[in-house]
Image (tube, rainbow, N blue to C red; front, side, top):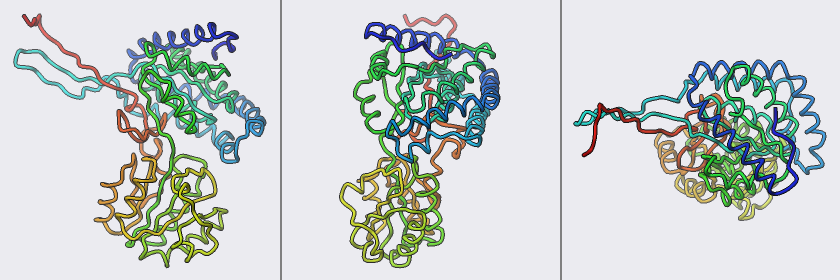
Length: 428
């Protein structure tokens, strides 16, 4: 049920993409009327279909993984691409978690009766048509389709070639469930076109597409931002920090730092930088260096850290701004809480930043002054995730401030309209 093969000329590519967007626009209008229970039932059917098709999904994924070295994927990127039975089950469970979320569409955000008798209601509605451009994460294919459908939006999925077979097979399962549920099947469309020019075609269609959401490398996101004629919801990088305060429980700080860095290194909410208060440095840095070294993590650091951890290499200025997505971390000693805050605000990417402290005043100040989408207090950065924060699943984590920030689930894919009811009112 994927889109036809790639057109061969610029004119036919434009027409092909416009036909996809037009179908999505019509599907969005129809889907906007679907009830919450009906959408939830469809998503539960999609989860069941994904489980039933697990063998075919894994076979498709094996083709992608086999081709991964030819695309120059790093070990971390291959790990993000790889599916096994447990990960397919997690995909199905994630779709069910979205189905279990309250339907945001139709929620009345405010109601007022004006002095002249007009009843003014502010009602939550879908955004409409979402263009989702992303790289080699087959689980993201299912998450994005589920979040869009649950929030009443049609979605156009343009995934990376690295996961083409996996994404195509997952979407076939989802579209089968949509058709069986008698909902508009074109509410979920996968663009099966290898030509990168297709993305540019879609980005010009602001008359049909309401929002673009890129998810992947910085080059992809910057391209979408520069070419899109519609609003873009994005995050560029996940340069996440852990700050160990002078009042930190050092056993807790070690556990949190190791988890934030090592639990899964190739993801956007993994820690890339560790800051340690000078008063805690002598006691903490040697132990955390040992713990990280045992897990194969390379440390690059400032001079104060290197005096305590001689094996650490010298950090360059660029290291403080780098999202490694692998076994490397930058480490610095800071003189104060405010110095740590300034460092995060200067070098961070407004994604996820954590403080480890037993001092509630320090925790409040850090949370108030750090400019980030998600602040963690005595918790790993890895918890900035739609599933972990109760959204069921996410279509991405936004570091923007308008219109949504942090993990974006069903509610974040809505806007509102004013519905005004009168009784023959005229303004004459």
